[in-house]
Amino acid sequence: MEDVLFERRGRGGIITLNRPKALNALTLDMVRAIHLQLDAWRDDRAVELVIIRGAGERAFCAGGDIRALYESGKSGNPYAIDFYAHEYKLNALIKRYPKPYIALINGIAMGGGVGVSVHGSYRVAGEGCVFAMPETGIGLFPDVGGTYFLPRMPGETGMYIALTGARLNVVDCFATGIATHMIPAPQHETLTQSLCEDDGPLEQVLSHAAVRPDEQSRVLGLRPSIDRHFAAASVEEIFSSLALDKSLFASETLKTLQTKSPTSLKVAYRQIREGAKLSFEDCMRLEFRLTNRFMAGRDFYEGVRALIIDKDQVPEWNPSRLEGVSGAAIDAYFAPLPDGDLELGA
Image 1: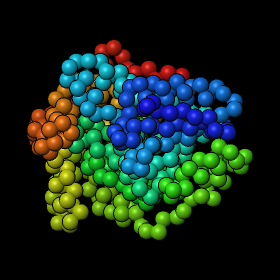
Image 2: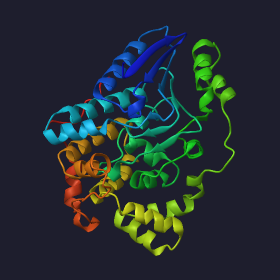
Image 3: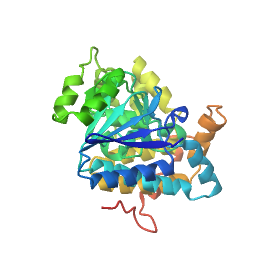
Image 4: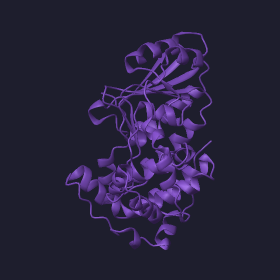
């Protein structure tokens, strides 16, 4: 069975991530195949739009195949770096794709799944959508363009999501701009047919099917607290601010942050602050610098071991405390690569 399927239907090209048992996690071969197909459809006049979706009901795409990245990185195999290079090039292609690119998101959308959806023209979220960037919990950083889109979310919500890995539901995604439309998942197949077969404007087709939220966004409801704490000038100041606040939100958030890799937290904090001032392409180049440093470090492998391989849920971060992560160490993550930055292609 193919891990990714491609279909022509009417005026549309359809991509289906087809690893439902693996939550449609991306592999290098899948990333390469999607890139090649998008190149072909870009130059095909009969293809007017592209739709991407995930097979099964549990996930749109849970991210990259972390176990494969872990095993290749530990053995010194170049697979991990190759994967990230091709993944970031695909993210950049989606961001600047000249034809409408529509992601139908239901179930889990995390990490790499965010990268193949959030940069598209339209992000259609179903009622089961669960969005997160959980990388600081496995000793990594929120990549796949997180450097660009997270600081452009309302207030400090992007920083909050980047550091804590907080999960957003469909209402949160719509309220914060992650999703452009809310359309119930049972309607996604009918929507696909309409988008591909109808001659009407895409916006009209999407708007006709869309629903309005019948509840308030939890994340936006927390914005006063999020903005107050996460606007701080450093990760240490965020911790201190939360510690002084006796609210349930503050205590739970602080407890969550204390489980994350201190190195990842400090890198992610600087990443989000710098990303607010960078172009999308420069954000992707920066992420490739960071990826190279994390793959050569220790915390990623320890985080994956603890949460995914052994599942003891007790990673031993090194350094284990924020004060042990020096400014010079963080500077080294952001320094230019000896062989130059990633070439993103035309």
